[in-house]
Image 1: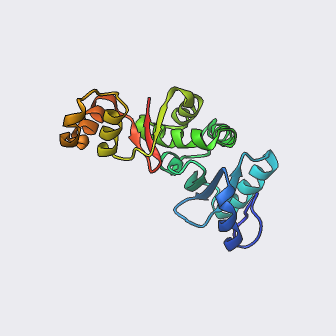
Image 2: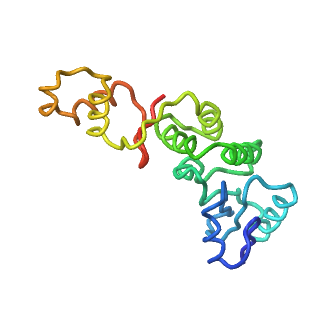
Image 3: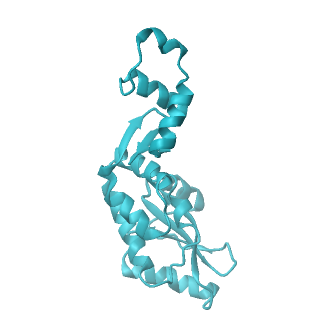
Amino acid sequence: YEISLGLVGSEMCIRDSWRNVMLTLHLTRGNYYEGVYLRLPATPGEVGEVFSWLDEVDTEAPTKIIDVVSNIPNLHRYMYRVDIDSEGVLGKLQKIAAMTNEISGHQRDIVTGALDAESINGLDDIISVIERVDEYAFIPGITCDKELGGYLVESGYMDFPERVKPYLDYQGIGAEYYADHGGAYTNKGYVLH
């Protein structure tokens, strides 16, 4: 049995509609993987309906997130197993959902890398990264040290005579820059604070 708030139809329809979902949580209680989906932001009535269903599963165990579907591809890594019953957690999740609804695709690419580049220790850190998205640089198409090294040389950030460029160790140049400056590679580019 599954209540699918904000989603309509069978499980197949649910999965098809997730492509447009900003933030959907799969919640459960206890050690069960049977659960319910909650699309955020949600109204108090929708949240109440989900928690009523969870009460039928288990009234003693904490409510846990066991899966996250989001337009931020790696967000699930930082929300997995969060205890929703803790004070203020649901409000923070609602805020994250609202914030991810408002940012552009380009900003989502930046947030994806920034989450991996920063030390994320909870929902407050996720909120902080999203709020500071404009503080990050994004270089599209740079997904590894070798590409970063090539970019640094070809863009003139690191100056070398034209005659030595074919002999440069672009991977080494990129690795050294990455080690000194940090950041994160994503499948769409390099993000740097």
